[in-house]
Length: 246
Image (cartoon, rainbow, N blue to C red; front, top):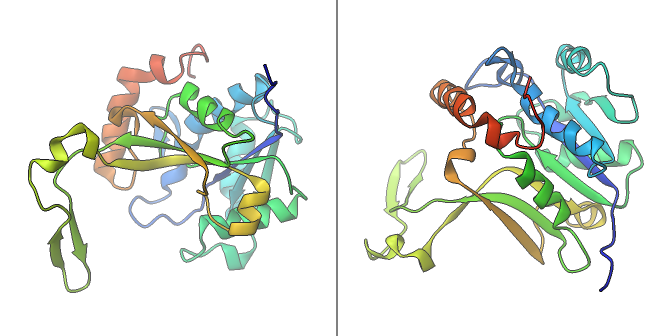
């Protein structure tokens, strides 16, 4: 049996300020703790298990970074890097790929695995994140979290608001072999491929499928409230290996 190569894994957590949909969304109180806490807590657990080498929290806000530092005061500077972005990467037009490339170059990271995890998807189970990061090997260059999303989908072209059906047979989308899958909140890729191609997903890739109830991504206040309800109900599954979640 060939032993699997173990890569050093760096996870970048972007928490930009100035959210348009929900003011200060990434630090908003979520069941008594800032929204960012729930994701970084899972990553900290994986770090302690040796699955992650370091966590970089990237933000344009000193205030945000200070809040992370105070909440995770027990982590060392080698484990948790609080990185202030330059002004040119602090706008709503800056892409996650640009931010992550900058962080990798900034800290001299050119090899290993890059994980990108968004705090706006707080319900992703810890074992699914573990599986995603562990999927990268000789044969797999990227992995990401998805959930199955079956339905009759429509496309809306703006600003004309032209609506177009994305199916020809209403029954077709109800068949299992025609299911669609939606990306949600977490990606992993070999660092050298990311720096070369500047994208989060490359081939060969291996998606990790989660249940739809864990795939909620928070963009509106309605989704925020729904996520709180789901976290109360499913926290034990989401943090299955972590013990108490506070």
